[in-house]
Length: 200
Image (cartoon, rainbow, N blue to C red):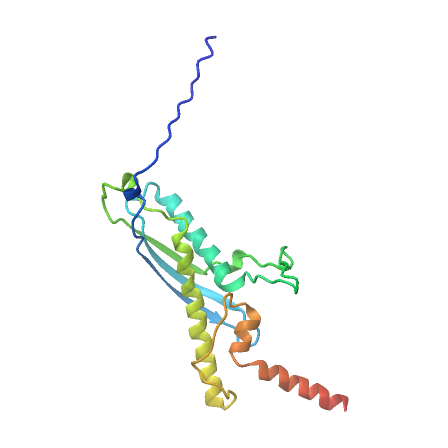
């Protein structure tokens, strides 16, 4: 009856020293590539991440996994295409491929490290939202290693004129890029030559 405000609020601005710190983390990934199509399957990813003293480990795990998968999209799938006028043409789900359920590593392990008390950080915690995105570079590096192995095998067979180890793998490493760098575009050329011979 007295219409008392039952809500309480406050506004906290941390000191600059509490938001200036380093995040320590590492990731390693194992991939398998289909050299005929360029499809990359992430077999396993292992992440170790320093969250300080985690305020909520479940939230931190979700943030780390989500940012990592977003990074996989950046490094492996999300091609940004423009037309001659500089306008973006990859602006829908038909042309812009975001990560899906089959993008997630088949075996995905995240381990949080508690780096202990720190008086200048908010409750001794560290951010876990954005930094893990960069850990997805491990998928791109693993893909590059797999492409290199495929090129070395082609070199042994005498089907690769270029260097097996000196090549540039674009970001994002989409299917056509991986397939071309594997050196198997000669398969398509061979099939095209067969079709040409049959038509003559």
